[in-house]
Length: 275
Image (cartoon, rainbow, N blue to C red; front, side, top):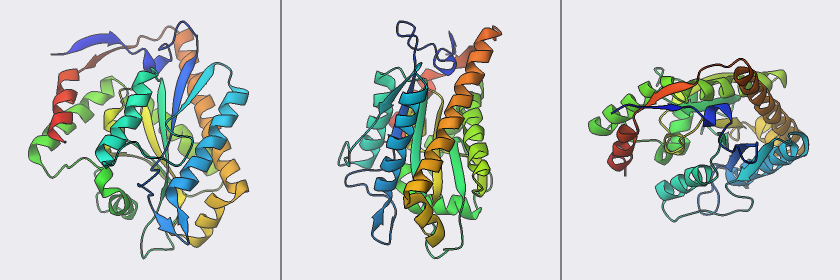
């Protein structure tokens, strides 16, 4: 069954009483899920440092945006990764979020020359042999939906296709803003790509997962762990969020229709199939 409903979250109308848009900032990994590890540095720590800097910028400069953090300390939500990822999405749902941003750091074992930034949205890229996507798979295999299972793949692909009528266009717009701001810093831009990530699949709102650099590249690791580098990345993400919010405000002012279709039953079935 198809349900027709206003796309409130995409247009920032999820909190009319407060007249504030809600951005959920997710520092990827945490606790027992440390992520990539290079030169004695855990990915989870880099992600958190950048997220806290980003949140502070939003709180200081965007009074009409409320920041919600999935975590502000080193912690995990469950002993099981799948439940941990779902818990992050649940925080966004509980707070009626308008936008979900998960911050991660990339890595590619045995390829120290690879560097750059990448932002992922819910989807599926055609170039599976691309080295950057292989890096994502190698480092976050358990965070991807199992598309080798035919039943799961069919349901998830139907959901991905349906995203073009709901949040997909907004997620992609946010991703492009992010990558554009990274480019202004002189960081290599690997673009916006679709990946069937569990945490993005679980979020019922515009959502992105951004990879701020490669820990496996010595120079880039030094940059993303430095105070200057983290401040620059946080400012780039802040500028992207500001651009996104301004774009939505202009759309509202022009009276753009936000009616969409959403196959909620398909999504629920897919969640059961991927457990």
